[in-house]
Amino acid sequence: MDADLRTSPDTERPHALVWIDSQAAIVVRWEDEQARIERVTSDVPDHTESGGHLRHDPAIRHGGGRSQDAEESRRHEYRSRFMKDVAHRLPEDADLTVLGPGTTHEHLVKSIRASDAEHHRVRHVAGRRSSRLTDRQLVALLRELEGDEAPRRTALDLAGDADRSERHEVAPR
Image 1: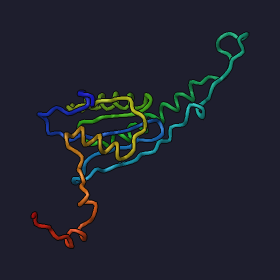
Image 2: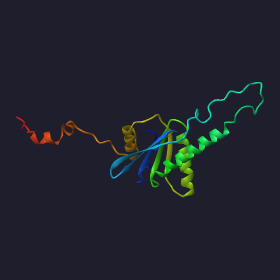
Image 3: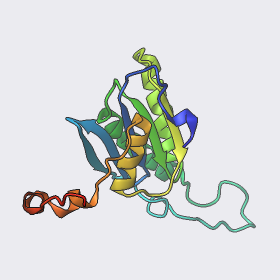
């Protein structure tokens, strides 16, 4: 695990985790001794829906063809709203780790850091590239960031409480 993603051992600050791309975000945090997973969906249009690729006639000088500025601007506006929605769901007193496959997680980290500076909040906000993770992987990563070990279950735990009451101990010979 990267050392820059861990909270420092001398702080007792909680940690929250966000996995985000342009289509969805998953926020994971501890609440009442349980991992709480919240999903947020996005209205950000795909690059292909927001204008697509345009071909220009090489004989025409610059300025020919439809401008993509309006479509890209609209896409950035949707992404900005989506990131603000995700940021508002994050605890203000927790250190954050933001993960994602593209540049959206980088934009969210930059936005959170700017907001923290504006509101004089001091917390660690880290970002790193990551492919899609399952809920269990996200919870395990959050445990690791918090410094907790995953709960281990033994075969007796898996057998159930009903079976334990029927077991008899055998004395050694």
